[in-house]
Length: 220
Length: 220
DNA sequence: AGAATGAGCAAACAGTCGTTTACCGAGTGA
DNA sequence: TCACTCGGTAAACGACTGTTTGCTCATTCT
Image (cartoon, rainbow over all chains, first blue to last red; front, side, top):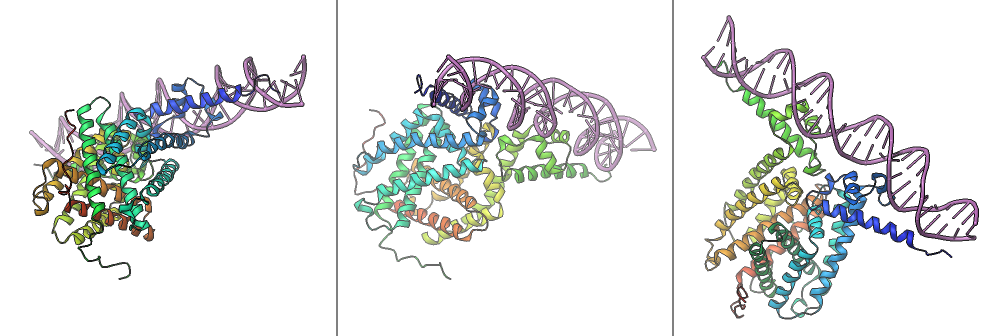
């Protein structure tokens, strides 16, 4: 038996977390591709060489940050899923949850929004994968809704992607609005509410039964 | 009188363009914040010191790239604006124009999509400004449509932003699909068509007259 | 024709970078 | 208790960075 086992591992994970936190702090003002290994260790108060005890390089740290960020994101979706009410209430809840989460986990959203189209391929791939899983979850919630009972899988997927992209865009717009500009924040959330309301109207009338089915151009 | 005036300026603009082209080439695989001055001059076949004859630093070159990219983008919008037909035809035209332009100006779209949320503040600001002007143009085209005659400015703006964001997301998805994957490209464009069609359905039924106006929460 | 301009170059500057090495010492397992 | 595992350190490595300086020489202006 060890005298007090686990102290080693706890200390290690602690400085690992310090590295992640330091990186996220620095990434609020720059992107991953310009983030230096020495920069991170300096911010974390650790010798440069110690970095290698935790990550192979900065890219691997970036991938770890992706998963950490989506961990907090999944907590968010749960908050909306709890109950489905009228269309307007669902929209208000959704937008509020996004706004709250952006305030609380600013760094995570900043990182995801920035690196989703960023220059580091493995990180972009990790984000795409997580986003895909997220979308599948959302589609799983949408499918059983009675209004969508006749939609096929492709259309549900299309709707889910639209929602996820809109949520991310709204989050990004909130980040650009800054943490202290309440007026700008209201403007962004109001726009998001109207866009979701517009889509809700589309959902109720799509595909439009009064219009003939579009001619397929798949095999011309 | 000069012997043959303008040769100086022409040569200068030529190597300036070589710098822009070299940078755009390198930016297909990395982001601006990690782009080095020496890297650009090396790719352009020019001595590092010569860079300063054209730009103050890499960030200024980035801002110049933003304006160059949007120059080609404005050509694109003209292609859609030429004529308005039935809803479905407009959607098909729009998506085709986006797909074509992504193929032809791959680098420009890649750059805009990447740096829109990137880590270089002045470049992000320049993109936001151009995107805002672009949205205003689009709203100017939407406003006179008879179906939208009763929409107020805020709602038109909201619709314009939705379209612009959707166009950019579609372009980005096409970039991720790769230039050679025709099947993936079809999947992306088909999704875009359905999303635009869904929004078109929403447009026709929004704000929903069968539902009471939402209670305003502006001043609780 | 002669003087002035200015784009481009080679060389050198001080810094910073990622990575490797050898080593220390606190937690660990028998 | 004793050997050992392993997270963290200091120092040094070559490579590369942005920027400055003084220069050349074709184009431009008078």
